[in-house]
Image (tube, rainbow, N blue to C red; front, side, top):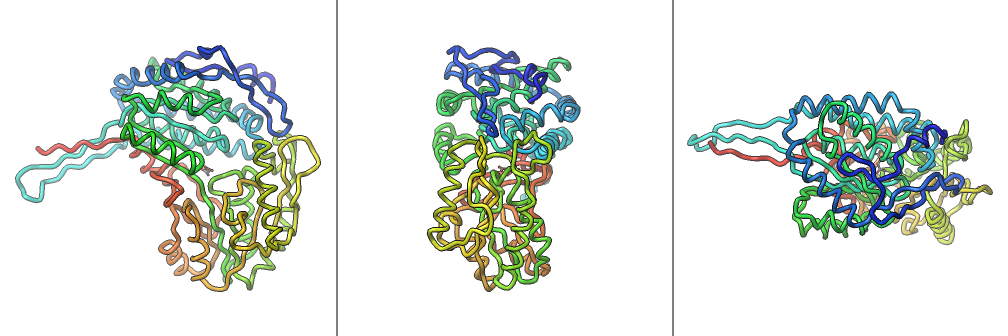
Length: 485
Ligand code: SIN
């Protein structure tokens, strides 16, 4: 990371609009996954700090909730403008702590900023309803108000976009928020939070509306916040396992929750598909952030009549990828986030090979420092191999064949997850049939990318509850009040 960017990064806790050290006086190290070198140390929030952050956002809530929607909208728009002006610096931080290539980091900053812009535009469009009651005796009026102080726990794979996807609708709705960024990538959130703080201060708005508490222990920070009766909303992006535990805690406080959890996205290529387009779609759906996304294509389900062409195309496309440090010129695939991630990917590939899969490309760690794994294509993969049944979170594409649409749909649905699916077909009727029959929250037809700040992102089954983005993302931070009048 350029030294001038590092020098400006806040490394404390943001509470009550002030950056401060942890009350315990301790810090934790943030590493560059491409080199394993320490970038800097960050304040490690104690449970007292977490309670203070919760207290600050609870105190700031009445004032922020009363700020005119237009003023909230304009403050968010100013945050968007500043993010855009500082996009290169933000991207450098994303790459340094998360590893993704700079071009991808810039795309993430633009995507993250778009949530801020979208919700700046939505803040003044919170609609209600007025109608005559069916019995004709009175009228029904439905109004909306912010749910209250919220708590967000964000993941390391999109440190800016997953933060803005939660913070922007919360602030637009009039909620305040404590954010616990991922331990592996707290710096990007700190950079963004400082932009928000500056903008609020310049406009004379309450700066305590956003608190940020990085910590080496999620439990230490979460428990006091989740146990505070003033908290009204929890938003989490991460694994299904952690999501289940958080839902149990949220049950005690009867909290509104948004849970964006694990995925096992099927990528279906039918016999009538444009195979070259499917290969390009596969590249986008699989290799974004080296396969470390919840929406990464996890299983390539390909009609047997086109499987050979598709596999050859994917190998040719993967061969052109350049693995390296995200900040190095020409890199298109960065490292995985940590050593354990590489171990897991290696085990999943070995398990597929044990069950008879062939390695067409990759299947190894490149000989270099950092947490790298080579882009890998596997064919003849057993449908029950863990490579197919578990979320890979790495640059590995296992190909499984099918012979009919029914079989493809059954394979696609044969998982506890239902976040996203991708399908390549020229048949419009089939596209609509798939939307009906595949158990998923999102479906990409003839494209390997569905994410958009203005669209409802989220899953069904064990992939989560609620939606982020679009109109639905704002509703998650609003309560309705019904007046019988
Ligand atoms: C995720 O991987 O959790 C989010 C990816 C996206 O928003 O595109």
